[in-house]
Image (cartoon, one colour):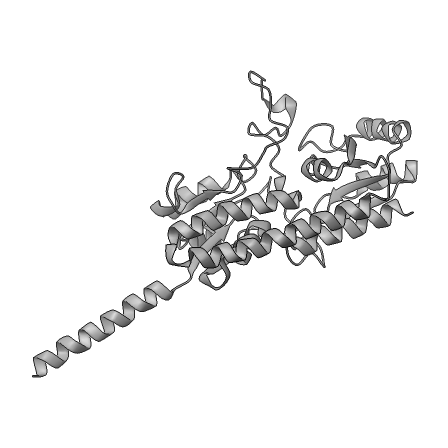
Length: 306
């Protein structure tokens, strides 16, 4: 009898343990906070998500830290922005020794997989340091088009459904809500900018191509002479002439870049400088993916209204 009770007790705790394991939320780690926010919106209570970077860090230049390795080691799903923007993440994967999140496994997800990519170098183009910080896969700043956010959300929902098929309907429902809000934000920005004709801007870095493509804005030039190369006095003088010749409306840059080059061109031309979040959390008020776009819209409209 005593032996039977012991067996029953063991089975009871075994069932509890299995149930707890099934109920545990998926541990998701992302490289940038936009992916974190989207994963949270799609995964809901079935995921626990952390981002390795904050919104005021430039993901081009990151030194991996031991604390990052520890988080990646425990991850069930590791989501990267891809297109060589967060190439440093591969050193974390190697150090973490988590086989499930290596490329090709179900725990690794490149969010750019289904993105229609811009600025992809022509086949045969020689890519070296003389071209600056060029990405062979194209421009990786696709997060700044809200409808690309929908593509990312679909990609994440599909993978979460593979990992937790019993919650596929739940993820799909969250995806529908996300898609509706993304379309609403896109319409809001389009309507706000439709009041102005032939909008033209100078950007600090080639971060805004997807945003400009979506909303019909011309990019007249960049303050960087080459991608990832700091502005020079000669190049800034050239941008002053560009601003005057091409009727540029404003200068735009991410919040984590040095504002002195933009301020120099602004003093010479009178153009307003728009300092905007390039990622969720990059500035106060950019608390989630959609709030980020509404803040960018407000800043641009303010500049155009001057």
